[in-house]
Image (cartoon, rainbow over all chains, first blue to last red; front, side, top):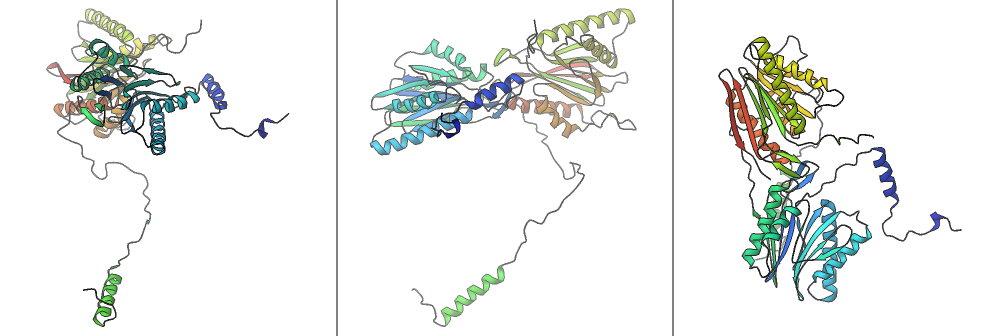
Length: 288
Length: 221
């Protein structure tokens, strides 16, 4: 019999630690909270292309880690992807597929297609069996027309005329289900997306801050970062805060020499003089 | 049947703050009620006026908080009938502590700050844990945003430890308007970073002339 240790590792995900993690959870060990994007992300198809939208709040448990993060990721000049779930996972997976698409563009000499991005994403997520917690709304316009797809963490996909994902998806979907119709104009599409994101921002605690919008049409993409800023700070103290020296009481002070300051003026002066001497005596050819 | 964790309770979020001054007391709390990632209401008061010089702000499980406030209000009414006067803040402080400890083995999921004026007319703040341990302090916060607000108050108000001898005054030398300004700024900051704090801020100021209420709009996201 071949011993386990003799078999060469073939790559792919090793699930050994998953059993260990489950055992730790059963014992009551608290896993540190990931930074999740909480999130409301949406996409819809209008008459000339697709509009994607996202909020800008990133949370770590009940605390807002980033008040203005970017959730609409670049995949290709004609394809963008909104990401919900664990922030690191959405960043990593979209960056990875974006690079793969660029290499593919060089290899084929053609504009990237949405289905290509879709297949790359879903096969990656499926192979990690849902442990890569990325829920995506992929949208773009290619030679075959406008496309809008959702990708779930386990690797399933749906092709839809309008889609929402994230903790605020129900709030946003309620807006879409009421007001979406086929053949929207660009202005109507942007307005509807902004309204859906706002519904998520105000009614879902995991979403907040600003509205980002991305409009993709044939031959042109517009990334409207912070399209709406409906949440300004409500109160700023006019008195301000002053932190005078000596306000913090310290017990010990340690002074360390980090570097010495060397005066170099003299050396420079010498070199200029040396050159001047050489020019005066014709030892340097002057270029006139 | 084993009781799993906090199945009996629910945390409705929110933050409360109280600051004691020389002749006033500021008690403030946001008005957002939430459960999980949802908002139940944007306009729910966490502050209860117990006596003419005593105000209680509580955050935690609203069901228990309602019951607790009702209990204390009833006990205060009884006290008024028996003693023909209003309860003082230190007396109410003791009553709240006993009420909380009475349910030591099935606690009120309520995190309280009691504010008011003591018998000499000076600002008086008591802070509690869920089972009734209490202490008179110069300022306090409880609730979801408390860990965001407390360090700022520690820096700006610098209350001396109650264990120091000779006993030092815990109340802040700030004026009433300055204290209210600080409370507003500190809540605006907590709202930026805590998802359970927001919507509206209710500020109650107790001084010799009575109880005054003020509101400030906060971020609604």
